Length: 333
Length: 250
Image (cartoon, each protein chain N blue to C red):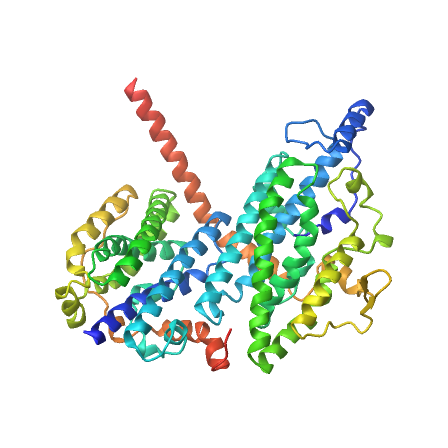
């Protein structure tokens, strides 16, 4: 998911790049060639990708928490199995993405430390709570739906490992999105009480989902470089519009009302126009003051600290084994 | 015979469902990302087994109940799982010890059950056997890593083994229900699995530099619906939706 990282500009100034190499690099990008880990790349390109890929990975990992919150309370065994499989997929995405980031010369431990210390960001959406079972459907439908809009273009990202990871991730996200929608459809068809629960979930998740695409283009001039490098292919507003156009008819099919009284279909452009996002809320949640920011970070820190002795044991055991193997080899010679 | 078969399948279903529920609690909180994925995977296998077994139990019972009614609408005293699977996750060592004891029993159990004269049980066993082989490998490898890791991990793993040991006796209990079905070629005689189970554990614990506890006193009661105090809390969480919204479909 989660390209909010592409809205920030690299602030550190690095040594000026060789103009000739830069031009050759840009020519490869313009020719739609894939950049691979061992190829020369500008330092800022590398940094932008490390930040983007690691924030994407962090989002997958933190995203396991709001959904994991309902695994033990899923209403049927079938739904429990589907949710377990989905959250397991998210963990798998995190693993791929940390591996893709590692090809750029940064270790998973470093990236994890950045997340746990609060220096690295993750998608703002996961700082909202899952209050009812309908929220599990809403996350699949809206959050994974928004993620897919962001990620389909990333399958053509100029950096090879990230682009390839995105192809597989997108297939799984697309399955999650349909699964979430099917869950809500079942609820809406079953009873008025359940439909009201779905409407309540939509009311709470709609605007935070639109925020997933980042600031509006008028306030986000920072992504121009990412566009030139073909890391990003569409602007935030373009992607947000695509998402709204795809999602509004789906909401209507469920018999739900989008919580936006300015929402209207513009016959001339063929697009749905919508109201203004609460950008104060957006900035506040990104900066750390959302309903669950502290809780999410603390859950990750707690798991990390509680698991330290396990990781240390695994390392100690691996070292013992290696030492025994080496000793056996010496004895054999 | 129908009553015995229903009880037998229900016990297996409850074992799988309750262990799946406990393992699911780990999601997002495991010591490594790989284990978050691994434990979720093991949980998923157990939930899958529970579904197949509950569906078959419901069919045998013939009263129109389905897998979800059996899992979510029975009370504490009606559950027939062994006490081992309901034990709280504790630290990672306790979760691993619970899985080691259970999987070391279930792998040969499913292998034998593939030869059941009951075609449905035989088919369920054939699938579950492959899963149990992976679960046992996973639990054995971690037992060895933790036992033969650091001083702290060694201490924790031995404590976990000792803590859960008294819950292993129940795996080998054979009451009239089991005996009747063993005689009919449907069920597996658990007593016949004891030597193999002990051999597996001895091999793993030896490599892990851990000690197999002495036989000692064993807990019992799960098969008759007498569970641990923590079990009611597990059910109140697991059954919350079905209790709060009776008769709804999801």
